[in-house]
Each structure stands twice: as C-alpha cells, then as structure tokens.
Image (cartoon, rainbow, N blue to C red; front, side):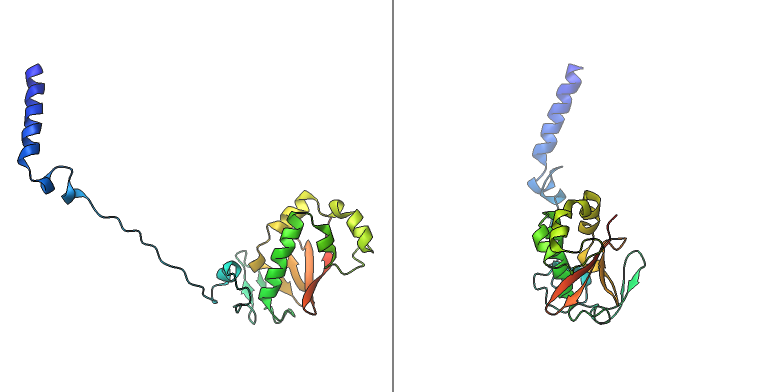
Length: 182
C-alpha cells in the first residue's frame, strides 16, 4: 500500500513538471476573464417609475394627459383631466406628506387640511385628536401607497386602498379635503 501511494505521488510530480505552464490541469488555459455586464441607466420620461426616482421632479410625466393602468387593473384618469396642472408636483407633495405622516408632524399636516373635516371642525380639534385618527394601521396604509400610483378622478387624488386620504390642487399648493378613518 505504501508503495502504491509513493508511486502516485511520483506520478503526480512527473506530470506536473512535464506540462508547460499554460497546460497545467489548473492553469491559464482553464481560466476565463470575468467582465460584469453593467448598463448605465439614463432617465427616460416615458418610464413612469423613473419619474419617481429622478431628482428633477419637474420633468414631463407620461400620464399627465392620458389615463394610467395600475398593476391591480385599476384605470384612473389623467392628471390633467383630474384637475392637476402638473402630476409630478402632486407626486412630490404626497411624498413630503408621507414623511410628515411617518414622523407625526401633525402641525405640518394640518396646514394642508381644509376645515371643517368630517367631525373635526377646527385645526385645534384635529391636533387634539391626531393620534385617534392617525392610528398605526391608518398610517401604514398611507405610507405603503406608491406615490406614482396615486388614484385620481374628477374629485381629486386618493391615497390608500380604501380612500384614506383625498387631496386636490388649490392655487400653487394642495389641500386635503377628506380623511376617511374608522
């Protein structure tokens, strides 16, 4: 058995030295140079998801003047037909509103609410009941809303699967005219 192992070691050494450097069992001829296939992504205004990612929110929105089909097969009217001069400004507004909701900046949220609002007739009443309205479940629904998939119709723009929040343009800004909470 010892002789067999010795014979194998001698054979391996002989084979290793008899081959040229580029013909070794594991050598240059067996290696492949790896080059990553990376494509640089440029902004394309015809791709709505890139509108959301792009830093210049004032770039043209493909759905400004035509209807939009969402993944759940919902069709909503164009931003223009819904009364929004610039859909990107509405998206930007909602993104900042989401941050205010996330961090419970109720004073900032109240600035955009048109009172009376359901059973909250004043800003003071709204602020006193903020945490009764903006429960964790209610906030989660609004925070999960994709800003580039805001539903809109002739009444305005809706956020949340069950219409938790509605807003519309007013001058150079927007107003929240409905909060549907339970």
